[in-house]
Length: 573
Image (cartoon, rainbow, N blue to C red; front, side):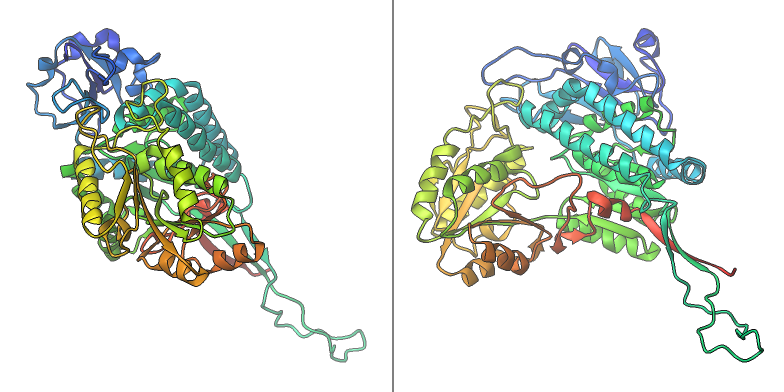
């Protein structure tokens, strides 16, 4: 099952692999082994991740801090003292199948300190001695390389996250849009080195007089020049989730590097391989050592890595995408060093259908919003608030579409929905569904796991109607392919239901009434509002929430502002 292991080591090539099998890496190296890839319900063949790629050195080559090492036996790597964690294929048919994709080096607090020191050492040159045009060109080159290797990266993403291959391909387009956008922003006047020259409020101390010596009644002339100049914040600690292994990285790294910051990135332990590939390509694009440092750590080490980022005085900013509870912990840990924070935290998005809505449009948007990545996005529609007069028609049309969803391994042709990220996630979702039914909800479709037919991480697309709005399926983000529906009769009731949550990331509503569009948009307590559309994220648009959904914005010109400080300079002339 696992006759070959693909290992990412440090500064070694495949040609010297066997001679270097037992060499110990330095403390700053990043390692991963890739093993047998996946088996699906329709195929018993065992594939190897490395053999699936046109360029296996994406998982480390001689141009990176890491080099590719291929060994013939897994046992060759079991006699050293390097801590590693497993990366699994969430789409495997069972927990006993050959689902191990890779063994990745688990870095610790000491490794994080070392990476931060490297980023700090690289900062002066990157911030002060590189031009905006140079940084722009590197971001563009990095984007080009990612697109050039898009098929390989898509496969890596699908294998470690479970999302269908077509979604991984789309994510590459979406993710590289951020690099392209911030390549442009780097050279604009609102970026680092730019700013504002504004009229001086100060006046000359000498008194103006007319030629005949009498005093002038006009205002004295202004004195000096006032400037507000943008400068890079400094070293940034970035922590990204597993559900968008590529786009969450580029959405943070793009504006940071454009602004002249250096970064230390920790990706999720569930999906580190995409980050390794992007790190490899960043080095090939010419991003200097220390400008983009990568820390891989297992779930056990993640807390101490995050803690080091928060308390280390060399780190000036934290950007995190993930759960609200972890975001709050990062805020607390960053307090003593008063760091800048960007937090994109949990959501629980309402999806309102008004009585005048185009129901076909609403159904299409609901499918796109709810079932993308098996419902595992922070902006997925969770709470469906449907006008009582159109509920029956909406549900009928919606259920017909949901029945067409094809569930399976993301690498299989025709699959439109993959697994949840883990069996724990699937089990938690099943408990929420069962509780909702016990509290009065009606399950009209799905409601069960697909362990026997597909694997332990799969859950059937599910529709619940008559959901109790106090049930956990309603009050908490479900992060899965479950639709919770309730009804309302008045606009005020719909808005009240939508806002009755401590979070405020995304919301969606559907209507053909122009006055209602502007009225309800202003009443919804969310940072993102989609009107008659279910997928609205874009590189040029601000992304972020209110209430307990976080702080700051990513995307657009607002995104680069998060990585800039404003310095006031007065010049007496």
